[in-house]
Amino acid sequence: MKSKYKFEMAPYNTWVYLYTTVDDFDKAANCTCDLFCNGAVSRRDDGNLDLFIPVDNTGYFSIPTVAHEAFHIADFIADKVGLEYTHGTCNEHIAYLVGSAVKHILNQLEKVVKNGRST
Image 1 (cartoon, rainbow, N blue to C red):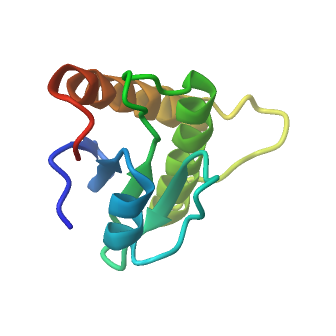
Image 2: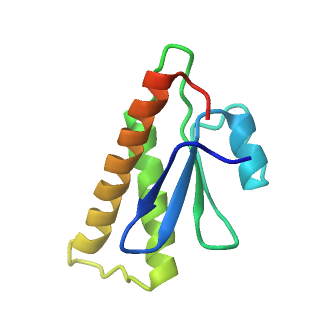
């Protein structure tokens, strides 16, 4: 399943493919996210990521879920490119990644809501 909503996390050479239904995510990520799943990120073999952010029929999505999954995106990228967490240093590089992921996710979700909920 190909998502029409995607974004690149530059300069880390990582594409994130957004899905707004659990069925579409499960097919794309080749995994199972139960019906109560509030969001998920799955790493592909090529290092790119599949992202599930539920969007209901009214266009509602959860900002805390976006933030939560953005952290997972940052964590996957940090692992992929060798960025380290260092206790007590504020880890600005990780905070930057989380903020960048949130911005990209919200930009894509704006398109989802505008165009309808299909992925």
